Amino acid sequence: MSLITRLETDKNLTDSELRALLETDAHDDELREAADRVRRSVYGEDVYIRGLIEFTNCCKNDCYYCGIRRSNKNAERYRLSREEILECCAEGYDLGFRTFVLQGGEDPHYSDELICRIVSDIRKNYPDCAITLSIGEKSREGYKAYFDAGADRYLLRHETADAEHYSRLHPASMSLDNRKRCLFDLKEIGYQVGSGFMVGSPYQTTDNLISDLKFLKQLGPHMIGIGPYITHADTPFKEFKSGSLELCLRLISILRLMFPEALIPATTALGTIHPLGREMGLKAGANVVMPNLSPVSVRKKYELYENKICTGEEAAECRGCLERRVEAAGYRVVTDRGDNIAFRK
Ligand code: SAM
Ligand code: FES
Image 1 (cartoon, rainbow, N blue to C red):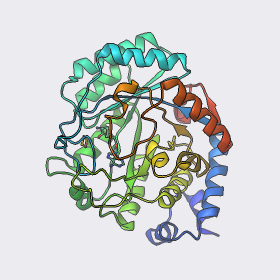
Image 2: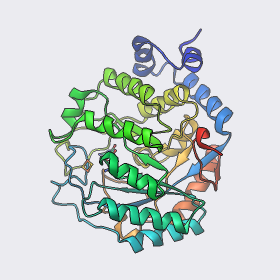
Image 3: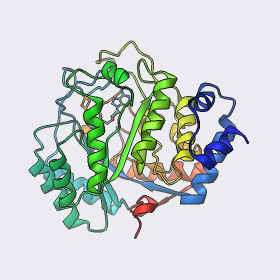
């Protein structure tokens, strides 16, 4: 039996088998075809769209790879008010978005109370929409309060499942243990949980990637976001090169085979390292795209990495552009909450 058939049926390979898949391009065509077949068998041609609202680029953390880290004095900081966030949702709803993703740095300005107020306002105005938060590491009580206020989903990449590697990417004030604690709390509370990692982050080895896949197996996430690490000149990692498109696509296909029901985005970072990166991501097994709903005036300021795409257009243009790209890749955008299949009523 081929490695890929084994991955498709058992969903589990040994470390050396995973290594064989990860380290050469020999299996790429077979992997991609199997991933596309599996994705079509679970979700058909559907591609779910999420309206991404990047509501603050202020952050108390200092991750070495991130352009909005607190030590980057060149970042021009901004915060959106509750009213501005609600305006983004109104525009997004008219454009057909039924999921809003509120993402930001870890910004203490937004207390748990304020987040709950924003979430409950969105919930009240748009009862048919899903609300996703991506605001970093919080207390279990905080997560529970946001959930009770109406949040459905939470995105928190584990970034790397190897503690040693984690400590090379983050200052000592951050720990892999706390990141994992957050993810398991979120799951227990009842969120649809998304995790993931950057591909090609500094010092990353194949062993690290194998640990990432095994950690995801243990967590059982409903969504998995991966994208290439991309250099930012105003970070301590400015000398490191960006991650590779090929490895990222290979990992998307492996993830699709290991997690047939997962919602996997073709990320903006993938579209940044190659003009057709997101289309290739969809063909490799991804089934979500996250166009930008943030006001055009702040888009360039949410600069996690260099040359980030889609920082100029209006939300309507982003929506139309994505729809055409999805169709050109052979899929179709659906106006739907796009829940993980296990959460559908
Ligand atoms: N603060 C929240 C958190 O930590 O989950 C959400 C915002 S954070 C900026 C979102 C994601 O951006 C991170 O999980 C990280 O994987 C990604 N990111 C940060 N810097 C990046 C870079 N240089 N290249 C690619 N992705 C990056
Ligand atoms: Fe903000 Fe990493 S720099 S969470």
